[in-house]
Amino acid sequence: MPFTTVFCISINLGLGETAKQAAGAMQKDQNGGDIPDIDLFVRNIGAARAFNGGINIGGDSGSWTTAEFITWLESQGAFNHPYWMCKGSWAYDSNKVITDTGCGSICLAGAVVEVMGTGGAITIRVTTPTTTSGGGVPSAQFIYINHGDGYAPGWRRDFSRTGDEMTGNLYLKNEGRINFAIVNEDGTPRMWLFKDKGGDGVHINNGNDGGGDFIFGKDGSFYASAVRAGLGRKLTVRSDNNSALSAHFNLWGGGERPTVIELDDDQGWHFYSQRRQDGGIELSVNGNIYPANYSNFDARYLSSGNVYTKGESDNRYVQNIQRGAPVWPGKVDEYGPNEAPAGCFLTQARHDPTTAYGVTFAYRPLQMWVGNGWRTING
Image 1: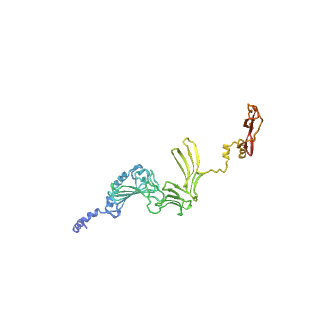
Image 2: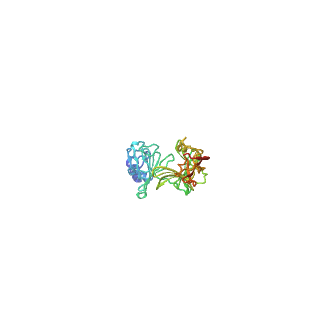
Image 3: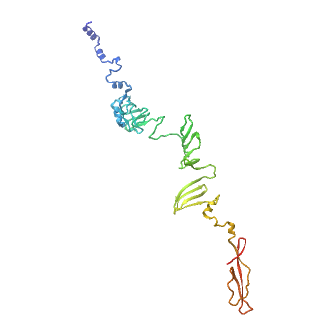
């Protein structure tokens, strides 16, 4: 058929405009490769945008702020789609590290970056690989939410069950008992940590291993069945819980008693040791002391061979004194008698009425009761 004939048929049938549109149509065998603006096409049909499976995010291993990261995402068209994602190339030297999240650094090498939302309300999720560099946190999922400066934009990090760290507080809300436990593989507990509402304090125990609770009391005290200090030889303070009263050691001081170590029970003090103001030490007991052995006192205060026993002492000290029988030595002249003999004393001297000048006198020995008999003084 001649060309003029075909042309005339096309005009007569109205196919001219159809031919023009067909010339700009997508070709099936191009599989979308002939779309001039892929990004605009995906945006127009409302599809998710898988931007790149291995892109250098930032181009080097330096540090980034969150603001710089968002600027880069914006340059890649990430906020033009309801959902946009890419994956950082597996090269530490070609991907930045975000350091201002407040919950750990994000190394973008090998990380999956997902952006959801457009305009002023966005959510970004970054999943890091199992290994990382530049101080980044591995095997973690970071989420950034920004719905405007007035709505507390910021990062958070999902907690990992295989081990993680936190920079903020962890709150367990409940009116009843909530336990923090360390358990064995079979689920049996080997440590419990809890505090009851209105209870006496924080309790820690060894789970199924037993041993009772260690209590950090609300009154500032620490409670345990026994307290042992030392790793080899141990100093132990314990209570068998069967005494009639409670007791306590107390270190205190004040005024003229600067340092006092005291043992008390509910009825009063037992004993104390205190340092005096002159630096010396004194020990006081509110009762009696019954030593099982006096040898330490004997060794300090008695010198063997230079002391008396009780029996020896009884045979030496004076228990009584008396005058012995009188002695009449005879009459002397008017000048009187001489001195009484040793151990004696004059008991009588008088004039003899039968003579003009004669004097009679008497003396007695002085005697002491020592031991079990009377003894006359010799001198």
